[in-house]
Amino acid sequence: MSEFIGTALEYLAGRILPILLGTAAFWLVRRLLIRRGVLAEGGRPHEIGTLVFALYVSAVLSLTYLPLLPMSEGGFTLDSTIWGILTGTYTAGSWVYTMLAANVVMFLPLGFLTNLLWRQRPWQTLALCLAATLCVELLQPLAGRSFDIDDILLNFLGGALGLLAAMGFGKLRPRAAEALKSKA
Image (cartoon, rainbow, N blue to C red):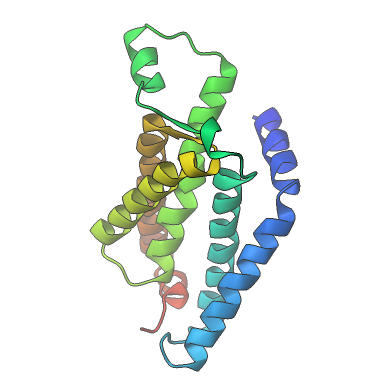
């Protein structure tokens, strides 16, 4: 596990500038929309949570699209590694399991944060998680990356687990959860 964390931190360190630039752009657009009355400003916990969300979204975009490679290198993979492992037709090494786990972990914050920060019903959070993973995967071949059916399943599972964690947090800490919600 510590090897996975070390590799993830090393990978993120190389992407810190795009992540910070993406977060700054998100934040500037948000402030502009608040000033124009399109969005309502939340309390301090909501604003901090929204900043964390902006960092998260920037990190996911950086991890899934950078570096941009020529279009010819990307592709679509409809063969399921998960199915191959379950049926015994594919023998996976530790790297494959690490990548499978990383795809779940990558979308945990999406389900968790969107449910806590904005007033959504659980089905809306799940729909957002599914739409987000579909967008990420369908656009990756344009950036020279690969579409993978397993990523969709695992990202959605991560978003659903994040939603469950947010719901649990809301039950355990209702005042803190309410403080994180937007006013609108």
